[in-house]
Length: 189
Figure 1 (spheres, rainbow, N blue to C red):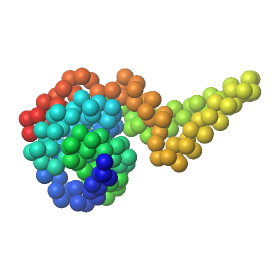
Figure 2: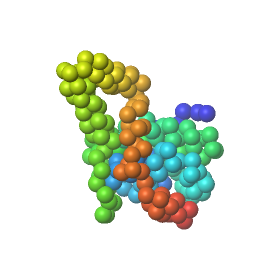
Figure 3: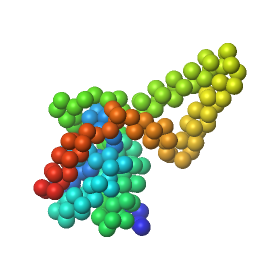
Figure 4: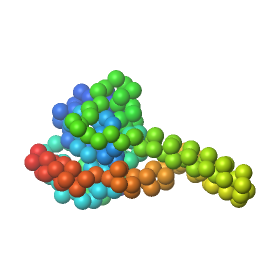
């Protein structure tokens, strides 16, 4: 497999109408703001969308987007393994917004915190819990140490196990109807 083609936000913005944009973040992240016209297919559901994405790739270029570019690069590699060409947005929606481009929000979308904020809340809560419980039961402090070690590993590898776990929570899962509607829209491009 080859390295996915990377497109910088300025490049993508000038050609946005030529792309079929696929946002591989969770539904909550997507609802908080996405590249205009993006279709939400969470990374863990990408395999179910391969036939629709193959059809969409025939009618135009695919641009895969996430928050930072990591998940979209993973998605592009999965798509390449299925012979579906796609490009990734360098820096993701974070870079897109930082460069002054508009982020759209779906009408009536349920508001869920972005994954990064959920991770900070969970990690911070577990650290405080470990320290508080450690005043009564000293080994509980190992919880804080484990979370700190996990954060260091996350930074060093640019991955996040806690985000992967939080993404499994019901409020971060797409409703079946949402994914089904997205797949139908892709097939009708």
